[in-house]
Length: 100
Image (tube, rainbow, N blue to C red; front, side):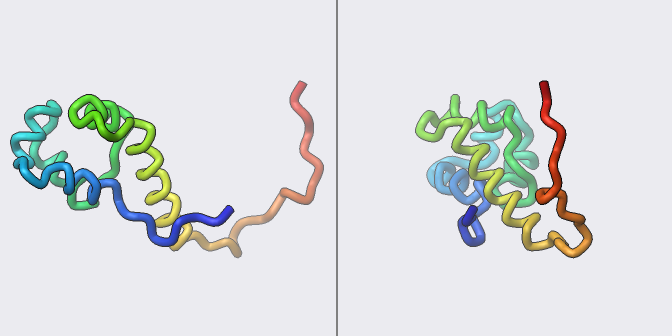
């Protein structure tokens, strides 16, 4: 499966949503600390399912699933950049037992 090249952290989209608002104001509205929201906006931490639900409720334009998909794409791409395939033994050519 081809993945997006270097997908953006979802904090970049959130930063656009905050264009005319302050981080403090939005953090208060979301029920989180200013530092927690700032870490997301600056790409230092990811968006949790709970935060995705809060963002959907607060902004409405972007569904929780979309926030989480963006986070997953970002996390997976980052992991792929660090992943060392040579240390993993492939099992996809062996017969796996079927679950009944």
